[in-house]
Length: 114
Image 1: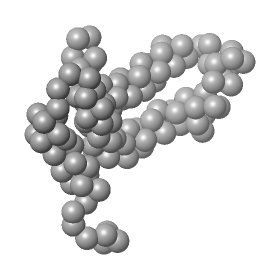
Image 2: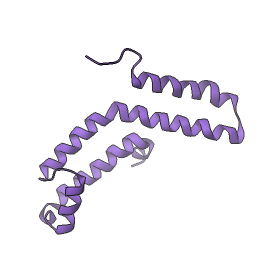
Image 3: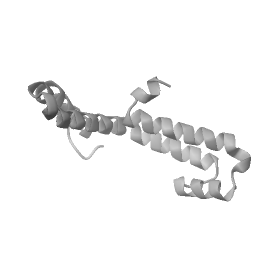
């Protein structure tokens, strides 16, 4: 059971983003449109993080565990020490997927061009 009633956090963020896109952005022009555009982008990131964050976190932790490390700091230390030199393809795959997950939240359009 969730501790809060509707609307959910995601629904609230979506409502504000949609209001900025439909009302505020259309009511401004030129330099004044910069701030609502930034706010729309930020809220879009928050929406994607709410939708994907828990899954990304779980999958990332599973990937780290598959390499025998507990977190990103331990991964970095293992790479620096050469401990994972014999598993470089796995390390590269983990890092590449982590970057893809971050882009999926920050700006999925970058993934579409790859």
